[in-house]
Image (cartoon, rainbow, N blue to C red; front, side, top):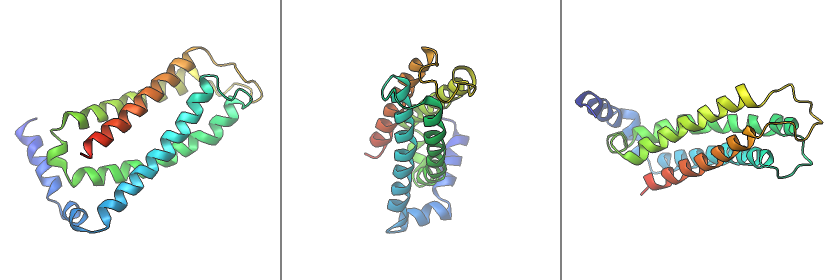
Length: 162
């Protein structure tokens, strides 16, 4: 990392907000709880949908399940992003140079690209809600990628905590 990047990370960690979060008895743990709750909502919904794409619970229509679960994943993101940023700034000097942190960020980009490819190229909203198995085999590949990447992201997050 460059000296410029190091200065930015130093500045972030020394902001009043970062200091207040670190010094608060309850604020940092509360942010962790919000972050983990968001992860649970996002990944839980994504896993249920991915498992359906892999052929489990075939009695559930794919379109109906997507309409129910995927908005929950989006809501989970609303918890994860702000809490993750706030957690990052409290320890940005260390995290900014940690390869595990950058692996986690790379995996998040891969997860986002997988979602984009799935929704723009594989999953056509034109699928009739009553049809159970109309998606191509590439949907199963996308589901496997999703599960592997999210497990890896969670593992990286846990490794960063120690």
